[in-house]
Every structure is written in structure tokens, then in C-alpha cells.
View 1 (spheres, helix red, strand yellow):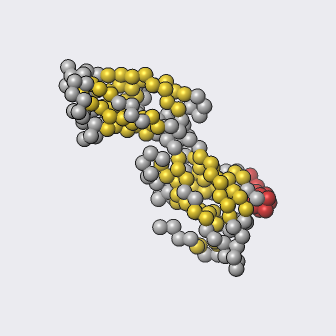
View 2: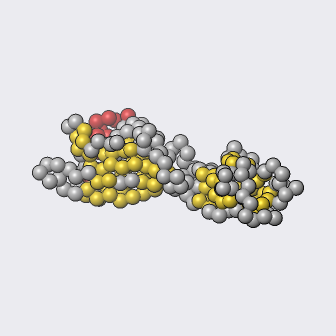
View 3: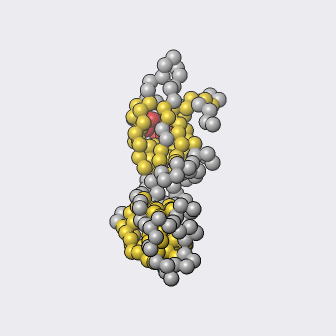
Amino acid sequence: MLELSIVNQQIAIAGKVLQGETQKNISGAIVAIIEMPEKFRAILSLKALQYGSRWEKMPERPDRKITSNDGYFYFTNLPPGEYLLEASLPTSPTRYNEVKTKVQISSPINGKISTTMADIVLSPTGIKGRIIDANEPKKLITNAKVKIQDSGDTTISDQQGNYRLIGLESPKSGQRNITMIVSATGYQQASHLLNIQRGQVISEQNFALKPK
């Protein structure tokens, strides 16, 4: 659990970055302050002068943090005012949408900063649905293989016939055309052409497989 105080520092903003579909913690995400009060902007300008050419290459700075293994991030000693945070996942930049969120920092009371909590949810690109028997709609097909043609993205349907492909590649703007291929023992293979868009999960993309 994140402690809300650090030696000689006060945490002003704290939160977690979560995966939108599963609510799992995301480590290695970058959370950056992209809009800020003028007082904090002036502090950053002085820091940039202090560090020189190293400033832009620093992985973490007063205005930029990387989430820990449990998804946490925090910013310390921020002046009061409105901040705009942007979260992204640099290890999978084409699989998740960048997300922006506004945070308001109150003025200190008796010299103490009140911590503002700000969890951020990254929206993945994905598809989910159910696989059934075409002749017996109530019969769910388990262990069916679902894959995206010409890619390494694949999954297996569970005991309820459900499948989920999350974190698919998709361009930042526009759509990606993909071909889904579904196969299962004792059934004819099925395929379907689909358009996906970054940051959106297509639900109820179901398949009814015909027995051989």
C-alpha cells in the first residue's frame, strides 16, 4: 500500500494506473503533468536549467513518473491549482489509448498538503465474445482457438465459451482491418473480417461453429 508521506516531502497527487478491461494494475506506465499552474511551471524551468541536457532524458522528474510494480504513482510538493495528467504505456504504445485527467490541488492547511487521489484507467484495444455450437446454441464450446490472422495474437475460450483478446495493435488514428479465425476440435473453422479502433473493446463478437 502506498504511504502518503515521504521524508521531507508531501504527496500532493497519488493514484494507480489500471487496465480498463480487467482492472489489473499496470506497471511501467508513464504519468506526466502536461498542464499546470504558472508557479510549478517556473519550478520546472529552474530544474531544467539545473540539469541541462539531461533533463529531457530523465525517466522520472517532478512532472513525470513511472508506475511501480503495483501500478502506483505519486507527485510531491505541488503548488495549489489545476493540473492535467496524461497516462500512457510506452512499452505498448499502439495497444492502449493515452488518457488525460484533471486534478485540483488545494492550498495547504497549517503547512500540510492534502493528498488528492487520482486513479487512471488505460483503455485497451480488444475483442471479446462467446463461441457456441451452431446446431445447439445452448452448447458452449470450450478450448476453441481464437486468433488474429498474420499476427501473434491468440487466445482460448474458457469453460463458458467466452474468449477475450485484449491489447491488440491498432493505429493511433483510424481503424485497423483484421481477420479473426476460430477453430475447435470437431468443428469447421470460421473466420470474420472486423475493424478495430485503438482504445475500444468490441463486445459480443460471437461465433457459432458448425460441426464437421
